[in-house]
Length: 313
Figure: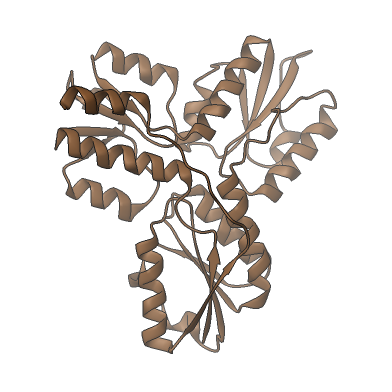
């Protein structure tokens, strides 16, 4: 069996920064740290931090007054920040800067009198946070069909934004439909779908034709990981999204001579290498890593973490 290992894959700069924030906070403060929602959407990562004493919460009310609270990579609404201040929480903002960019665009468009159409998945942490920046002034669409059903205020000036982890092709279809229905609609100065999402999708699109099966490492609630699986399926290849080797099934590999392995932006490299080792051992797999695009992006940890380190030192 031949295994193609997609590059880029796995952790993006925003995920690296968020995980580094939580690692450093643990070193400075020890246990007693809370995180609003999952730090990133990955079961392996969340379980590792839970084992180190981190508590993940879905409500600010669950955090004792005066505690340390870290905001996840997906960002939070202004309402959540207000509640944290009311409880005198010491907050560390690990929001990905590319998500923050979308928040700032929402604030700007709202301030300038636009009604915003947000392209994204209902209930996703990032979408909830972005919509909180302009309550009552944002409508959510998930597909081109949603655009046809969209009810916007008469005579409203319209702008669109997108969740950072969407399928590039699907987002473009929705944007085209918006532009057809609302010719005067405006968008962000620079596209919102992040570089890592785009690059991982590009790698899957380029390499899927050369294989019989695609394995995506990532969790079911990871939007960008789901998009990688969908992209491979759209190219007519069986594709599975798994957290680790315990979910692999022998029947998937029957008659398969070439496999593509990739990982979503929140999946750690350790699970990728475990999968590679399993295929080497079980199927005598020959592995070839193929780089489709280089990545050299790095985000600094937030100022409040550096302040926390100084106060502790």
